[in-house]
Image (cartoon, rainbow, N blue to C red; front, side, top):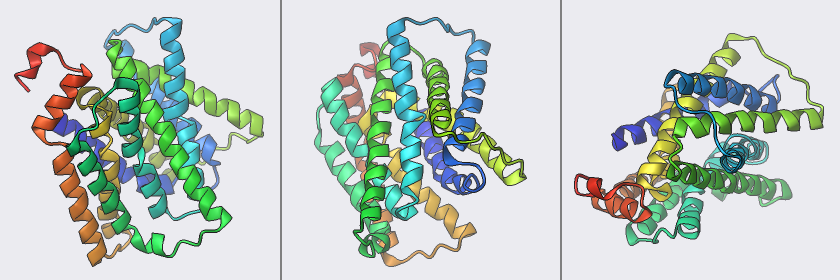
Amino acid sequence: MNIFLYLVTIAIWGSTWMAITFQLGEVPIQVSIFYRFVLSSILVFGWVLLKREKLKFSLKDHLFFIGQGIFLFSINYIAAYSANQYISSGLNAIGFSMVLVFNILNSALFFRTPLTRPVLIGASCGIVGIIMIFWPSISSLDLSNESLLGIGLSLLGAVLASFGNIISVRNQKQNISVMQSNAFGMAYGALCMMCLIFLQGTPLHFDFSSTYVLSLIYLSVLGTVIAFGCYLTLLGRIGASRASYALVMSPVVALIISTFFENFVWEPHVFAGMGLILLGNIIILARKAVTKTVSKEGLIPESLKKAA
């Protein structure tokens, strides 16, 4: 089941890079993000009601829902989208894949998860692999103020998303289901975006073209409801350190899609980077290592440790 969740997350998020390109244009970025999470929140609330899960939580839980919404479903997207205005999408992918590193550090800080050798080696292979794939963008980088701003925004998006990941793990430890916390988190994230839109005086413009509407539905339903549901469930099961490797694998899927739709050329450095990423994937998701780490995080009961 974990492998299925992992593959679904990678496949969907790898394809959202293409869908996002159809969202850029007439509608301001923050408005498109607002539409995305309003629709996603409505769908997730509908699912929770259908499953008859509770919707009444303490003030403390709501504060964590607000944190999850701010860090994972709103301002991290503004940072990541804005970075594309100053650096290439390849460099932005590298910056955002650093969520893996931040998750490892934050897991150690907040949950005292041990920094095991497989995690460190696997993460290193993945990051180096991503850098190798996008090496042309790195080597041609002009360290101007705009480029540094773009890199800073990309890393900021990764840091914020990591905090959102950690909050999700906390919620699951409190026996709050992923869909329950996502419903409120997405609603609070959309509310945060609405506040920013009004403060900036940005008009709520909408593009009724088929490409915009279909890409919005795809990003809301698959890219948000399903992908985040799978990813955050995985986060609670195998830990933030390992689940976040899906964010390193996603750009690889994006490149495969780009091969068919944008005539992407596979050069030697791309194959080398792909090999390192796959090697890191094998190392970081090794069955024994996953079971050991998840047990230490207390995310599975003693009765299931032997079955794992």
